[in-house]
Image (tube, rainbow, N blue to C red; front, side):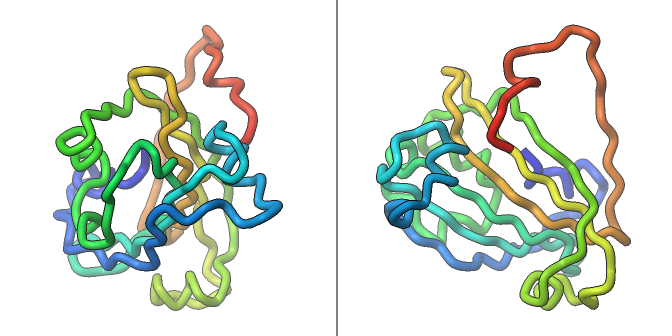
Length: 170
């Protein structure tokens, strides 16, 4: 659930550059990764896309998202210029209510570094996460690469473990 944090950080979102968008493409043969992360049968159609997220006109995040195609029929690349979560609520009646994410420092690959306009030697922050809807279904898997020189994250800790806090697959 990382995509809309630019506004919370005080950066007006610029028009995002939508990257590849494969509507309803089945997971590749033997590609159990997306199915496992989304907790769905291997071979069920997925939608996967990559977006370059901007703030103040500057590249901030390369965000790769995978969704079960059955939850978002008719989703097209031109639908992805704004908030995905607003679109899920307004068009599909889906409310995301929670998520589990893993944060780690990484070095960017050449393609991501080019999108972010940074050298491959600049550290970045990667977040891999799953989001749950109000019916407790896994709705999305997101892998986002944040510029390390423009982001800081704050986390909240709780003393009571939840089922989602121990979720595998990230």
